[in-house]
Length: 460
Image 1 (tube, rainbow, N blue to C red):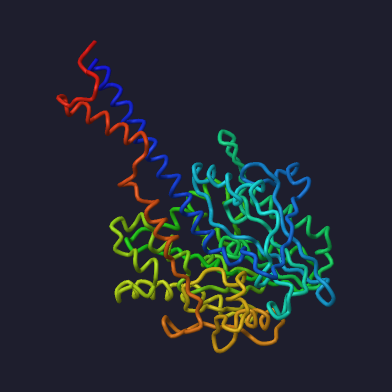
Image 2: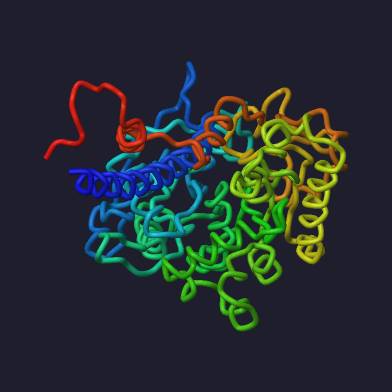
């Protein structure tokens, strides 16, 4: 009986550890999803006078293989333009991170970022998508579209994993969506702006010239990347968190074939997913809107929990005002890297910049940062005014803020409960599952032979 019990204990231990690790990984994925939701909350949360636009699924997309990770059809939200904006189009590519492993993609297809089954049926249009002149002075009466993101590779993957029923079809989603919108009147556009936030901001860079090629030369076409300038940076422990993630994603999702030849002919595919290696070769006018201390990159690339197991950087990561002098120097170096990366890009007269020294992320979709009485400014000019001046060629816009902390107009993000939850969820050292607890209980029975438990372990 003792030998049988020891064998059972070993089995419980192995299964318990496996379950614990599995649960840890799931909690980490959920934590990252919560972070993305936190960064997006002001863009999607409806207010008293919200403009809620219904979801349209693209009929026939599946026959073209243009499907979300789980095989469901992709979708978009369209609010029609009016009066002088009837023949102008703004396409906003949704963001939401990436998936770089089978596990993370399988998880992702159980969320709105991997399946249209879980997408909101109506979405709040605010910021650059608002239909009110007082909230969005230059684009309020355009045809405004939010293209939903459900592939996990910035609309650039091509492939599938049959064993796990995963479809990596980002490039096909992009192409099919553009076909749909062209048929709905975008082919007649007099002017068009491709925009995007975060992973969507990166997608607006990747697809900028493709977007331009959809239209005749008489159409005014430009691109805007908001929070899409992801840098190939070193984290606080010397690792390359984002490069490692991109490498896995590019390989898993077959992204290489859809990256620009101007880059892949000179660099490896992973390097060609970083905007710093792409922007110099974009032919279409492009505007980069980015916080110099991008909140997502600080959280996930510069100070990932995996690189800070003892939590020395935790307070700084949650609230920049808690960073000590050496930590702030590290963040200032990140800003310097960003400015270096855009140096050549900024030389072109057709391009635009708004790099403010804030701890923020996605400033075009949030009303408070896009255009409001107290919205962020550089040189007393708000983001919406800067983008509008650039698009309509009213004045050149190359706005670069002074280093932190001279800008008192920032709407900085402070991570309290959401980040503490992430830190705890990503820790694997103190995880207790029902199997762990049962395993500990059984070990106690073995180690305390004289204990009275109401039954005997020695009988055959």
